[in-house]
Amino acid sequence: MLFTTAAFLLLFLPVTLAGFFVLGRRSHAAAAGWLFLASLFFYGYWMPVFTLLLLASIGINFVTGRHIAQRVRGGAQADAKRWLVLGLVFNLGLLGYFKYANFFVDNLHALFGAQLSWTRVILPIGISFYSFTQIAFLVDAYEGKVDEANPVHYGLFVTYFPHLIAGPVLHHAQMMPQFADPAIYRPRADRLIGGLAIFAIGLLKKVVLADGVAPYADAVFRPADGGALPGMGEAWLGALAYTLQIYFDFSGYSDMAIGLSWLFNIRLPFNFDSPYQARSISDFWRRWHISLSTFLRDYLYIPLGGNRHGPARRYLNLATTMLLGGLWHGAGWTFVIWGGLHGLYLALNHGFRALLGAAHASLERQWLYRSASWLLTLLVVVLAWVFFRAETLGGALRMLQAMAGFGATSATPVQLWQAGLHASAGAWWCLALGAVALWAPNSNRIGERLLAELEKPAAWRPMLAGAALAATTLLLLVNVARDSVSAFIYFNF
Image 1 (cartoon, one colour):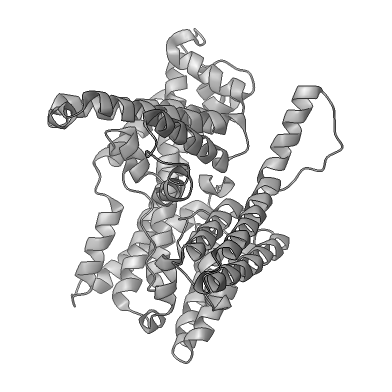
Image 2 (spheres, one colour):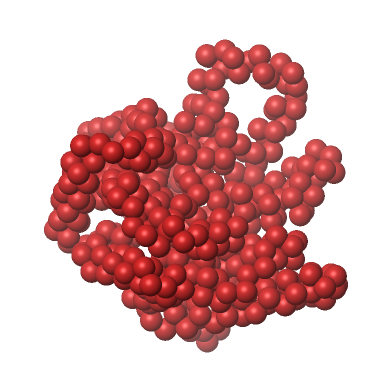
């Protein structure tokens, strides 16, 4: 189920919200159970059969986590480690089969020319997110950080619908104390109004901005994947259009997830923080998909050794982490290259800072250096997005070839023209959205300030509620009026 559809906004959300607070007045356990069941329905609305897989994953991980926690409490660390290994094998095996089996078979076909009899595996939506969430839970249980004995609260922690499909990747400690807090089961006007307002901002980003610029990316990338060579101008336009599409698509989802959670008095961690304002690739990864970056750092980069074994090992760990991060996004060589590029970028960034030493701090105070750092960071991010968006390696290489000036020589942007689009309109889209991404106030800051102001009694609160409701209704009508409804990009991962 998509946040942008009438089924969600007119039926699922109001029924779920009303049931949560009505039951919460009588029984907190019943309200938590209701939200758990509603989240399962939300997930199963797409393909009910995969709800059984999700429930099996939850059950096995809950039992495994209980065994780990009991053995840690009893001092049987070796037994706890064996249970942890079993849990990791289960989660990674599940993720490996559903996400990478097709990729593995396709590469066997390409290498050996053998056509195996193979039924294509359907990727369950959200499996990467709920697998990583539960891996983090098992590791935290092994380290003695968590000990969850309530199966309903654990199930809700995994399936909570605002985050289930596209993140953030949650930690047990971020959610369980909230579910145990009696205050969340009572409706609050400030949270309802603030949540609706932030949801409307996210909906605007998705329905108007991301979906509005998407055709200019699709019109260039699809022919390139099919073998066509675009011109230099339209290749750059397509790459920039996708750069802005994925920005507002993911930013919009993150805002909507946070706004929906505020309606239920629950706080999700911020997952997106104006990443195109970053002045280094390290800063970019502190701002883009923050929960995934944190997961990769805490559960992969640091266990690999981090920066504790010298520069060479550090760069190898960075490369390994980002390669696996690329594969997490998708089973394809384009994602491997995307991750490898970011690993290379990070290694070069850390190496450059080490080479400059103390001089780096004084350079960062200079406007010209900061501007050049920002421009270089954005440029390499755009180039890497080409591999992320292209469906074939050949398509990505053709895009880069055209962007380097070796594309089609026609003065007419053929691919855009064939799609019924005008390059000038696409350029204005990119210019306007680029200005918003770079200079508009950060929605996280807007939300926090809004909540602080809404806690004070004010005559404008009903007006804000009405404006947010009207904006949501209008954007829903815009979305419904389209020929098709587009899913969020991160639903594919």
